[in-house]
Length: 120
Image 1 (cartoon, one colour):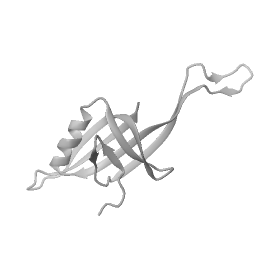
Image 2: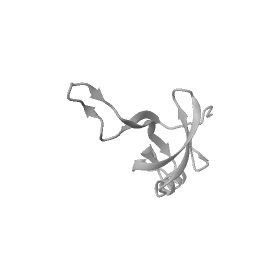
Image 3: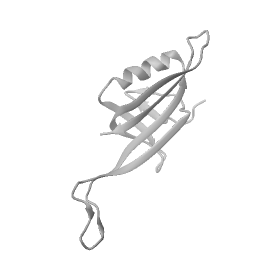
Image 4: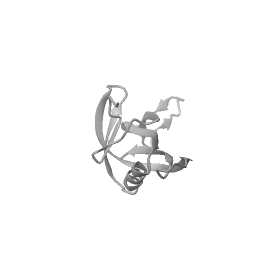
């Protein structure tokens, strides 16, 4: 039984992932860097831009759903923010989509799907 939603992409509440790695990074302008005095100057354009790496063990049905989402250029995503433990909504895209057959079964196999979600 799933108690917490980790990812909801385009209204599809995905099952519990095998792995969920959330990273926040800052986007810096090219004008930052080291000054003549030797101090570091950071010109932050955006802070806390989300990047999420996930992996799922899934059925062929879920592979089809995830493959369809991977082909879209702009996705409405709700993800679990690990700082607040609440769902946060943003626009993202899927990168590094990978599908691997784990085991051949009479139900068309058990698959491992992994990908990264990058915030716009």
